[in-house]
Length: 421
View (spheres, helix red, strand yellow):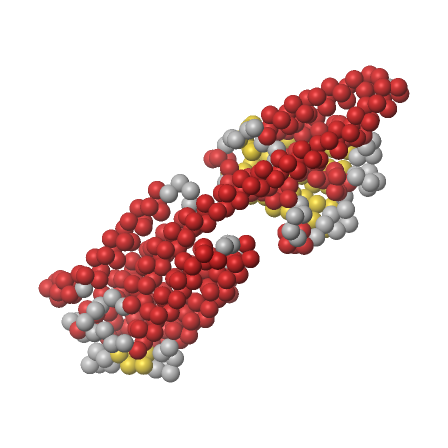
């Protein structure tokens, strides 16, 4: 038995040695890469594990076919091989698009696995005869059809990115799809009895490596895009600032005659706000939440003087954590300007608390509300919200979610992992 295993390894050494070396190097790089997203790292590690098992499955298929007559074990091995291929393609779909609707894909892969599992007790899909020959049933090509459908969907997801990606960067994912399709065709129509590792397995290993390279290219692109967005935000703020200054100075001018003491107070708050705003723009790292909260309070106090009908309330139970600069203040500003301004008894509530392993910040208002889906799809709108969301995700691994009902108000929830503080 051991001699046969050694013989299979020796016979396939030229194929399996490069594959295992490639997978090991890829595993090493993925584990040490500090720039890869946590979700992508997890998908890559699962893909590497499944592809490694696929290589082993190919070798076992060779072993059970030529050296060890055990129909049950060979059936189980074949079921795994037919079941794991669609799973790997689904993982590639998740790499290409974070917004992939996963449930239907996992249902398809689950049904595929169940169909092939019937081979343990029926001849509907395939079976291994008593003389150890592979026999095809009516549903033998189920895995091929499922994989073909998933590959078409993967191609659709890839081409869908063309709207905001250069065509040259789509070459790698498209090449991966075509190479896997070519490998499927070779495995189906070309006999390769001397090789234990299938063309599809080889193509899948290479595709995993190329997807990793592609993710790095995407990271560079997204990083450059984020820098440009940051510059646009600064320019936008410099354009908005004169408008805010003009209105505030007009209010101070009116107060100088009506209430000089209040005018002095507003002038002091305006100076504090401007100083904090300039300091915040130059903060590359996280800042204490209390500092961001102070900045928000100063801004909201100026706005409440300008608009006496609005009210800002605070319920900050936990404040001992850090967040990116200019996160809460722009959200409160957005709630005032687009939510409660002009609304009778408009209220913005800012709260913070620790919820399990997260610190949770909520900014809610009873203002006009808006269509969240339409705002996400609209180009150039709510750029401040998108910028805050991206910085929270990238700088501290947090999340920002928006719930809004037109005519009823908006609630924005920020969740910051406690270990990131």
